[in-house]
Figure 1: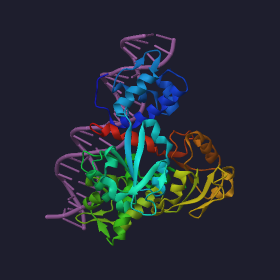
Figure 2: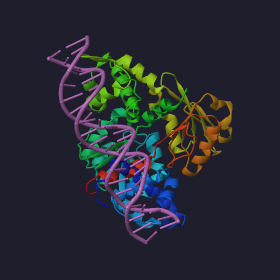
Figure 3: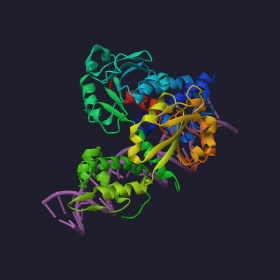
Figure 4: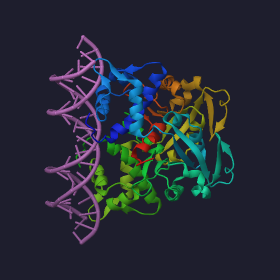
Length: 207
Length: 207
DNA sequence: CTATGTGAATTTATTCACAGCA
DNA sequence: TGCTGTGAATAAATTCACATAG
């Protein structure tokens, strides 16, 4: 356990391990070996051990890992040990789906505000969140949130990002199909649904 | 131009280049340098040249690349030069959003059928597609499609995947937050929205 | 005897730097 | 001169294999 810098690819896998551990914990298990966890989350056992080795030794040789200890540690590393508030910008089809998306909760995420520029949507209440006018983006509402989710059309994405930066947001999950320019202290993770689908045919024999 | 095997990371970037090229083409440009394209899609210029070098020399030194030629070539490599039909399984919030998602079209994707097990949804028409009962998955409707999109809850994902495999699907874009087991000739790309959001706090200073 | 933790080997991807063509 | 194409250098990630602890 040498406190190396944790590789990016490991950071990408940690939330997957964390979910697996939480599920196993719900099933009443208290400890798990790298092999078992490997089966469960579909990663190799040595990959898991290597990943864990970057931040500590939690395992008991011959036994495995204590699930709760390990889960707590991963949460601490990922900075997920407190609730994170996020604002959503763009309440179209995708945005509405994200508002209702059940998967955020287990990691402690909460969408506390939603914004749109379409008057037909403003004022509507979706999943306990009332859609506000996008011009209110730098109002007190967002001050509680350090994260933002962008679900607006491509063309609006950059200006929304600019507004979010001005509003003091620290990290962005971007669903618009373009890379967004922000100061480099702000982290952007882009999920580009169509480009992911677009690589599928490459891997298919004839098709 | 050596016809190396194209690295996975390059394959991941090709759809991004392709979209950039198509946009530039729409703007009336006919050629572009690696530097210009680099600015446009936010990748480094040498990364672009290296990536292109895996499959041919298309550039004119001192000038740049012919946009249409290059776009056509990338489409051919990615197997995107024909229309691809996909079926959607799961027409909840996320599934509905995907049915309406405008970004698939530019790559030549078409969602031709949608399935759900919720009777309240079956029969509804969303974006010209009528939702069918999931039990009809191996009917003629899907025979035209080689791809599938899974947008069902986690628990149903594996059984849906099994059904899709039985129905002869070749590639799956999976939005359920779990890895799915399929024969290895079938390619699965998983988009796990929550785990992507979950890595964001790691990269944020205090938060 | 089982399962961890980790150096070392290997593979893969990024980055550089520049020769050479239009 | 401007920009491509690519070897060579670096860096990063994966994979192996095994000594070591419980």
